[in-house]
Image 1 (cartoon, rainbow, N blue to C red):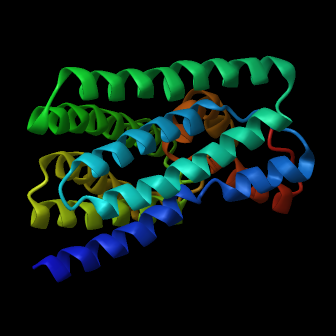
Image 2 (cartoon, one colour; image 1 turned 45 degrees about the vertical axis):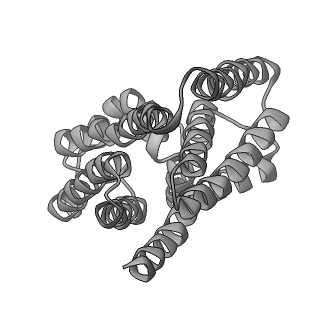
Image 3 (cartoon, rainbow, N blue to C red; image 1 turned 180 degrees about the vertical axis):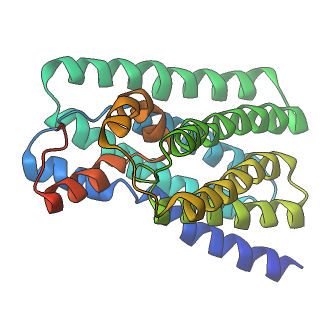
Length: 253
């Protein structure tokens, strides 16, 4: 049983690292162009907060090493993304990123860890951290609802990359299985929701992967859905940029 749990958790680590690494093409583009362009720092700031608290949850949880290691990798990668973003961002966005980091990544993390360490003991500490982490995960997993609504409305999967949807579904599924075997409610509920949403996204992808859509309809919904996509697909603009370059058009056209 323990060997199976460790093996599944190890697979989950590999898949989660791939998900954490999905913004790498975005930041390669930022470094190459020397500009953050229209990218928003919020997805990386919130991902850093989520990874930090899940790593802390893993430290508190008995036999939670695999939860700690994968989220520790996430903390390092998200910190790197935020550092690169801040370095290449124009002054107004540097200020915005700095404020978000100070309030969310530093302020919230210090408050949550401080309160749980000082005011709580034993299982209660783990329960409170688990609730907070599950809430953050469900918030991030819930953002694809806007993407799915756009897919149904436009009958196009242009802004829902297949491989990102597939790996997010796979990530949710493997960690749900891990949670069931380990009887971990908090890991199970958040990743279970992510797994279900991932399946729905893939079904929508199969349904709408071929139909052609009027260009003006895509333009009308693109701006409205952009921020929601970035919460869970932070490298979505990199995919879009590549497609636009292949067509010989600008991302803003």
